[in-house]
Structures are given as C-alpha cells and as structure tokens.
Image (cartoon, rainbow, N blue to C red; front, top):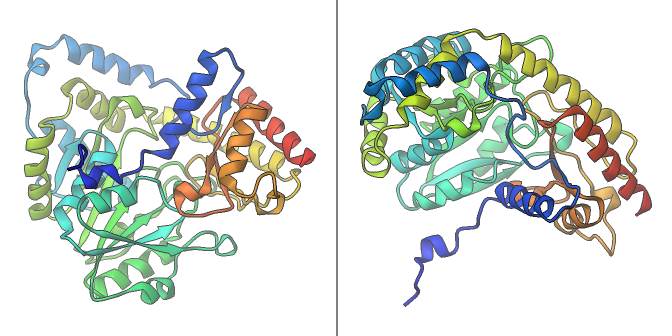
Length: 393
C-alpha cells in the first residue's frame, strides 16, 4: 500500500514556486540571479493599508474566531467594489472571503464538480487550474489558443470541445501567463455561449485592474452578459494592491454554491485572518491612487521588456494588454543543446543567472513566461543577459 495517496502522489508542485525557490537558493549561495518567475508585484503594500492592519491588530475583537463567510464590513465593501469594477449587483449571501483567490478557485471547483465532469480550460493557462480541477474529481480539457489570435479562445473553439460531460468553463481576462484581455464584445459572446448551453463559468478577475491603454479595468464577462446566472467571480487584493502575502480573496456566485463552498471552508480553514481582512477592506474602500501608480509603473516596464525582446534573435512576442507578464515564443532559437523551452529555462538559470518559467507549465510548449513585476534596473539587466545568451546560440 502506498504511503501517499494516489490523488496527491500524482499531483505536481507549482512550477512558478519551484522556479522562485531555486532562484532564492542560488542567491543564498552567493550567485547573482535575476528572477522573472514571481507572479507578484515588487512594491510594498501601500502604507495606508498597513496602518489599518496595525490598528486592527491592536483591537482585541480581531483576536478571536470570526464569521466563516468573512467580516461583514469587508463583504459589504466587496458589494460596492464589484459594482464599480465588474458592473455587477451582488447580495451579501453571494460573497465568501477566502484565504487568497487560490482558495476561492479550489472551493469553486469543489462546489461545482462531480467525478467525470469536464472543464474547458483555454491554454496557455495558470499552472494551478488543472490541479484544482483534478482534486475535485473533474477532468481538465485543454483548448489550445494561438499567438496570432492574441491567445484568445473563440466560441467556435469552445464548440469543438463541448461534450455532454462539459460542466464548466474557466474564463480569465487579463490572462496569466499571456496578458491577453478580451474586449467587451468578445467576453459577451463567450458569456452568451455558456448561458445558452447551460455551462457554468468560473471568471477569474484577479488582474482586472491591471490593463494598459484607454481602459481602467478589463470587461467582466458577468457585467457584459445580462442574465448570466451560472457564474462564479473570483477576485482579491493580491495583485492590484501588492498584497500577495496577506492572503485575502473572495468568490461571488449563486447563494447555494457559496453556501456549499462555505461548508467546505468551515472544515478546512474556518475564517480568514481578521487583521488581513481589515487591511483588505482599506485596500478596496480607501484611496486608489496607488493602484494607478503601480499600473503606470508596470506599463513602463512592459514597454521596456518588449523593446529589448524585439532585438532578440528567434524570439517572437505578442504584446500583452494586461497583467504583468510577457509570453514570448522561443521556438526560433531551440536547437540540439536546448531542444525545449524547459531545457532552455534551465540553461538560462545556470548560465545567465536568469530565472524564467517554461511554457509547458502553462500548457504551451515552445514559450517562456517573464514577469515584469520587478525593479526597472533588474528588468533591463536580466532581459539583456537573456538576449546576450540567445545571440550566442
């Protein structure tokens, strides 16, 4: 009999965390390593949010268990925040605060999926979606997208993969890892497709405020598709407010689905850290100028990274419209020494001191993901190192 369950024995670890850990270990050994692997802002959490947490830590009311669904003031704040940024009216019974958006995603899969249910998962996709689907007993069905289509899935693509077992579609805009952002018309077409076929939609909106151009927010599939009922919205404070370590996210969906997920959470983790919840309330309800400032800084870095990569031989990169990643194709430089993006990523780390995440981790071979959520100086130095290595191949 196996010591470890088959379910967890076959579960891979997070590729992005593995890259980050390896880069951290190399730095501890005294090596100069620049990491493009992290999916988190390099900025500190804004001071007004930290100050709110300090006050909350001093208040004895926050030293005890609290409501499983989340602190009432935060849930009320999420109602307003969702109306403002997603264009959706929601009720308190539809909201549950979770330990980061990742827990909200896992609990949504647990609430909706039975063994054998299929989940349409456009690729490239975040590394963790398949794990959450499989742990819930579902079957991830990868839908490859193309760079020439901006890494966006179409209704025709969805129809090709639809079966009687299809239960749910994962819709992400802006995307990790490609930075693709769907227009309002594109999002509505997909929302209507799902509604007409009675398919659930999990809409991950964690990067919704990190978009570049004339818009301040990515169109929400729920906001642009009137009457779409079978939908769960995922959001949180991690990315837009530089609060990855605070672990506060939330799910919004039909009351019965949220109630089921709440029962799961009551056994798994109970309530979310109270001090962090108070900080999250200050983030979504307080001054928003830091969100704008960080977005402008990311946009500058995005353009810098794209301009340097444009000089790299054998590299082709679609311009990302949101999030803080670029996802270039490196197929033009693969050779006998570096036959895959996985081997190339290893070479970049060992030879150039640059950490990237290979595309296979996101369901797309021949690509690498680079985060531009790092300092301007490290970004330029790291990408230049990478391009220099490519020029020698």
